[in-house]
Length: 457
Image 1: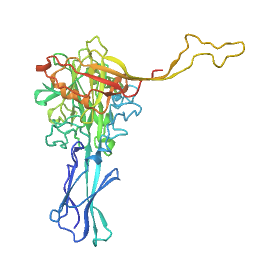
Image 2: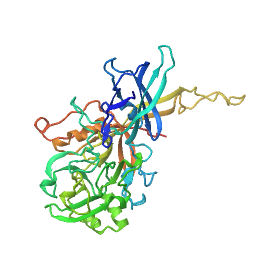
Image 3: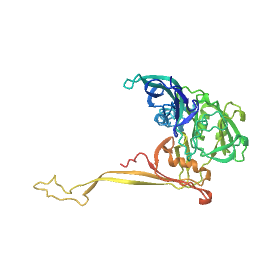
Image 4: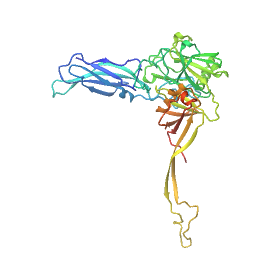
């Protein structure tokens, strides 16, 4: 009797490798042979990456369980590169000098979501000492895995529902931007917005799952401080670099340049007059973005939650520090730190030797040995140090705590300098969830160490 799949994760929705990806298999009738065991072959892109074997649970329970999460996780990584201009990062999507006509890009080099093929078989032997013979690929299935590092506080795993693949008003971009309880300006029935704060001279990017999405457009609407509409613009996903029906792992997660700089420079390049009007308006207070199955602005076609970008130029006397970080869903978010920042050098190390003073090599019959007072004895040959930066946020609402927690536990954090990303490491070993009751006005600080040592000489 051939081996068969009993239970597999959904084959069309993203499954997280943060928790077990359990594959349950069985054989309906026990085989009359020796050395029986199941064989599960895991492939990506047609290439075998792992072969797993296990016995049935017992002679009467002909089932077995495989966990492929760690295997899949090894072949998944965050994408940082602008696929349209591969010498640049995703923050440059739509920007002048980086293929501004394409404001959407696919993944490049590393793939944050991949399709894996699972082939199930078994092996048997004619006798207890006989050579086992394999029977492979008796059943085949696929799954889509991605790295979702959310903390679920020990609760049962609830992802794998396609919630990051835009086809429903409740689906979200791969962003941890907070819900602070405010209704969308499109209307209260459109749901609560996810909040971002950004300056007009800053970029931003939102990642989204494109596999299985029904969205075909992004709708962008700008508002003034009183909530009146300035203008509404649409982006046809397929026309600005996106792919509606992914056919490769690189296309399963895509990136939308959605910051004011991305939108402004893209709008000028493609002559999108509506987008130009709203994003360059002197009265622009905020704009909202959502995915739509139609060019029409109608809740019937809403395929994602609404994200709001509030214009915040900062009013602090200190220089703004913007952090770009990999969030818990495998996408990228930004946050501005407008209060006091400081820099220091730590772990300063010096290579030294003791140099004898004097003119040892120039002594002659007419030149006596002597030395000058300025000559060094102990001499430094090399100095190395670590550079640290301490950044502090402006006062924020309590609801930002989970969003900022992602910075504390992120595997990949950068500071932004123009269109360049400077890799840093967060060195804080703890993170305090602050509340208005305990801390009154809430501000967060992080200590960052440059990932690469500064060049001192």
